[in-house]
Structures are given as structure tokens and as C-alpha cells.
Length: 316
Length: 316
Image 1 (cartoon, each protein chain N blue to C red):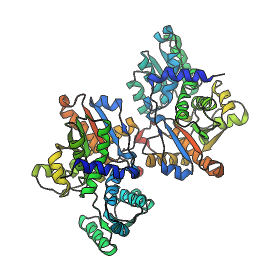
Image 2 (cartoon, rainbow over the protein chains, first blue to last red):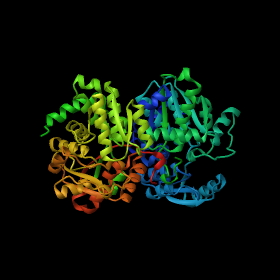
Image 3 (tube, chains in turn red, purple):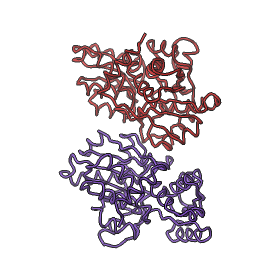
Image 4 (spheres, rainbow over the protein chains, first blue to last red):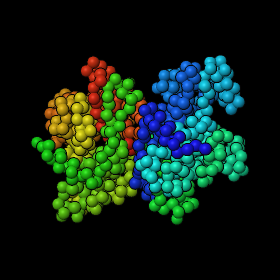
């Protein structure tokens, strides 16, 4: 069981390596949703996403001997850049296993932050196998992007900062991919919120978490045909029990709703958010429509998970 | 001659109606330009651009009798929305003469803010004639988007706020369209800066200010084939003398440089800036390349003028 002190100690530990990102509001968006929304802008985080929090925490927990051999992970996106930058900041080496289908902009990010890319076939098995091989060959410690307690705790620090600014949030929306962010955020809500309901946002096209909560066991995705490329991964055995215990439910949204939410935030708030973040916004919009009475004038937090978008492939 | 007290009084007057927008920095952009850049983010301003400052100041200077009859302006873009919103906030009516070629997103903005649109042919003569007719018929006071002393003073308040945060800027870059922003900003630099050099950014495709400063008289544009749709207008007899006196020079940039600067800021800073704002960024990049020695490690302010972009027509 993760304690509140573990979360607070983690926050103190990683603070020198991360930004306390701003919490933005928009009168126009509030008017549209008839509620008071608070956007925790992790798109302004180092490496453009919240992932640096968990990556930094995981690395800082290594022994000096482990640090000498570096770290290895597999990631199609933001965790790849985050682990590379965290490793560079702390002065160790990072091996990144990426599918050969990963967006070029994310590969460039990894290289800029000094990570070594190892390309593999775009399957769960291939990437895990290559990560295992690298760990065996180099002695690097494997750090999972989402199913790792240190990572989960680190990701929860974004919500801690949000609750520091807005202690009385009624709702907190997070996108759900591998489950690290929402697990950490739900722990933060439990310890630092005041009766705050935590809700996940998920594409219909990758609704493993929705189905897992229904069935009571971890379900895979049958298709992942979604623009929200950060949300194609599935839950893990470490974060799933936390999600079962502390997340109220998952709100599913379709691709059109994701794109419209993304456009709304870009146009109205003038910030670049990635499709995965737009899923949380779309979930809030959907929830507000279905729960008009409960939602009205409530305080609603949204974790804007990141802003890493390939501008040459926009859906507008 | 505009005094420092006129600027300060204006700032006090309009404060309840505007945002004190954030000043953002980016380590990656600093590294690229080898200087310390401070972005005054008027893309986060009400109605998405700095224009609300001058519009509000001009309206607040009207007599009660004048206010009853409302205001009228001609604008292809941001001033149209700004005057509509300023008028709505103060409780008066705004007539907006717009060319029938104006982007739909800007027309929607005007209507949302309660302005009445009057469409005209897209020529300087047609819009001035229609504005004159409306003024004569309704008694509305004509407010020019850039060549009006109250407007110029209002636009200068963005730079005042920037100097309040960064008093020792070495350089200040502004985009130059009709000349209101750079005239006001150069007055702010004179009174509240500390030996700050003010530079304008202008597209080669609409370089009237560059040529006007060379020739010593107001020059027109021969072509306006630029993505920076806010910068197609020309200087006026009220702002030109201020620009002649307090602006060091104009840096011209080509269309590719504008698009690359826009992409740099969107990708790296995760904020939506419009092409006109990217012109100021591109000017800073060009200037830094040509003046490597002078620019290194200097403090450089950039007025990010706005974030109103038609997402369906992006250049990426």
C-alpha cells in the first residue's frame, strides 16, 4: 500500500528535476461546460509530458552501482523522451526500445536528450524481448513506463501540485493508457483531495481499462485504431489494483470527440495539447452532458498529460 | 508627445478589462538563439490578442454621450474581435466593417462578442468609406485599429508589464503591421526600459515599415502575399513619427522563416501563436544570426501578439 509520505517524499526528491507546471483556466471553456475547470498543464513539463516525473523518481531510487549500468525501457512515445532526459539530468545512460513505427518527432526527442534508440517490431512481445536482452547484456535496470510503483508514485505528483492549488476539486479527469498516471493521480486524490471523484478518459478504440474495471481482471485491447497514440497500452498488475480501488469509473469517447476537444483547447486556450490529453477533456465534456445537474458549477481538475504532437500530421 | 504618465494612467484604466498575460521562457529556444528570451504571451490575452488593450483604452476615453452611440472600426482580424469584446465589457455597441474575405473564425469571434459585422470589398477605400457611412448614420465614434493615440498608448501596456517583470531587457522585438503595437511598445521601452533597443519584425512580402523608415515617409505595400495576415496594413501619420524616433530598425523575414519560427514555438513551447507573432520570433532568429557577438547571452523580449489561427488552414 502506497502511503501519503511516499508521495510527498517522491515530490521532494524529484522537484529539482521537474517544473511545477501552471494550472490554467478559461472562461470560455468554463462557460461551455457550465463548471469551473482547472487544467494542470503537463504539456509545459520538461520533455513535453508528465512522464519525466515517474522516470526521474525511478532513476533516483537506484543504487549507485545500478546507476553505473544505466536504465532501459520500451516506449512508443513520451516515456522514451522522459527517461532519456531524466537519465541525462542525473548523469546516467538510457537505452530506449522503440517500435520502428514510432513518430519521427519522438525519435528526434530521444536522441536530443542523449538516449540510445533500439528499434524493434511494433509488438508487445518484441519490445519486451529486446528490452530484456539489453538489460542482460548491459546490466541496465529495466523501468516500465507505467507498471512500476516508483513510476506510479512519480506520476501522482502532478495531481499533488494541482491539489496544492485547488484543494477542493470535486472531480479529477485523467487520460488512461498504461495506467500509471491515473493510478498515481488517484492516490494523490485519496490523500490530498477532499472527497474528489477520479474519472478516467479512454478512447472507445482502446477501452481496455473500461472493460478491465467491468470484468475485474486486466483486459487487452482488441483494436487500437485511435489518434490518441499514448493510450494504446494496457494496464498492469501493479497499477490495476490501485485503479480498481480509487478510480470511480472510465468515460469512453470516440475519435471525433477527441479531435473536437483538442481543437477546442488549441483554439480557446492557445495551448498545444496532444490527442491523449484531449481524451481527458473529451471525457469531461461527455460526462458534463450526461450528468448536467451533478456537474454544474463544480470544480473540475484535468491532467493535461502532454503536448508532443507531430505538426505535420494534424487531424484538423 | 505621449508622456510616461499617459501610459501609466492608461494601464490603470484598462487593468480591470484585460489579463496581465504571463511571460514565458524556454531553455530549448534560449539554447538555439544563445540568448535569454522572454515571451510576453498576448496570445493568452482576452480575445486572443493584444488588441483589446488599445480598444479598451479608446472606448474608456469616450464621453457618456459618445458611448451611447457606440463605436465603429474596420479590421480584417484581431482588432475586430477586440473592439467587440471591449465594447461588450463596457456595455456599448460596436460596428465592425470587415472585408468579405476575412477568415470565418474571426467573423465568429466578432459575433460571439456581440459586434455587428458590416461586410465590404477588400480594399482600403471601401472599408474606410463604409466605416464613415456608419459613423455618419449612427453617430458611432470611429476608432482606427492602429493610427489612434489612445490605441497606441493602450497597446504599449503589454510592454509595460514585460518591463515590470524584466526591467533590463537589451532588445525588444515586435511584429509591425499598422504600427500601433510597435509605436506603443517603443514608448514603453523609452520610459520603462533601460537602454533597450526596439526592433520590428516584418515580412519581406509586406515591408512597408522597413521602406518607410528608409525613405522617411509612409510607404504603401506593393504586395501583401504573406501568411502573416495581421501585418498587411500600413503605418499611419500618428504612429509613424513615434516609430521613426524610438524604433532602431526593422528586420525583414521571408515566408519560410515565419513558418519555421511558428513551428518552433508550437513544438517547443506548446503554445499556439499566430503567424504575425511568429514574424517577431523569426526576426529575432535572423537578427541573432547576423549579430552573433552582440546578441549572445543578452536579454531579449518578444511580444507574442496573438494566437488566433484558423486550424483548418495551417502551413505545416
